[in-house]
Length: 213
Ligand SMILES: [Zn+2]
Picture: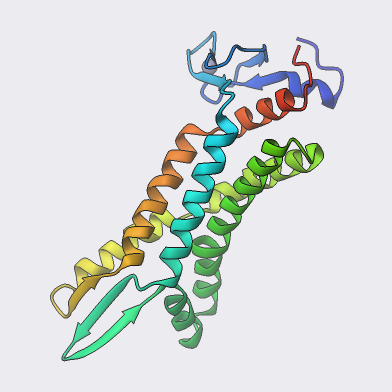
């Protein structure tokens, strides 16, 4: 295979499992392309991807806002009741002068997940209205950098571990945000497993009527 310039790279796809280079071929709606060497999925073409992606992004953002602005848990110790929300947890870290931990948590628990789904939302809106071809490319690159830093699932596991440790010392009532956080993590995992950035890239080329040869 001969690649003469950077533009030609758009016509090729690398297998994520065995790293074999394949030429991208146009697919019919609902069909998928698999690697000839190892059989791994390379890309699919789903014409309803934009509508589905937009709906999932909005759902994730809705769960994210509920998870952040309502109590995660209500802790009762010796008659004193304390509500805990995610912003309160971050604020407490800064008040206790754990600045490094505070900034790391602020980014991986709040800013990166929020940024990821805002970008997904903007991407699918641009694709839906068929506008901003150049911006879509830049947003996809930014998204590929942000996605690995979204660690809300690890944060949820750490909350569960803390709650188990507190059970013997205090009465714990699970709040609305906890369930919203669980649903957000499930949507996040689902989107990461089913929605590959290469598929959005290919869809962008189809929507803007570029021919894939
Ligand atoms: Zn392969």
